[in-house]
Image (cartoon, rainbow, N blue to C red; front, side, top):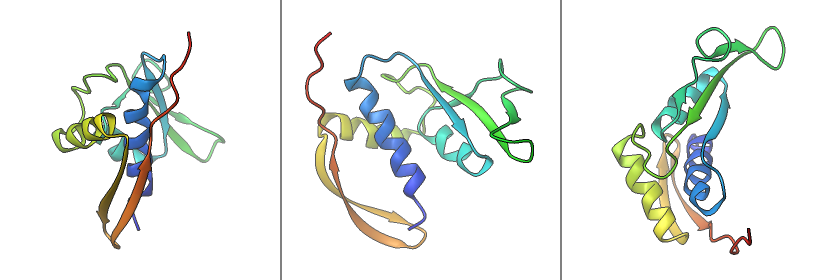
Length: 117
């Protein structure tokens, strides 16, 4: 439907507040960098050539990205911030998602069992 990686990215970021993680490190193909930026990732220029390097082989390029504020998401698009906050406050819901190939329902079941430290 043309939005699979964006939905997956949104779900992953929504889940981070249920896990004992501070930062989220992301490796993106060139086509997925834009979606990662939408959910709050920024290019990690400390790696490779300003964040870009050959991976997993010499004819493919990856971009290293990081979400440093997985609770606030200051770098995320406001619309994505709202969607992620909604998933965090209502982790089990059905939502109609729309992409370039049409609309479909997604059954989000994101409530994880409580983790014991």
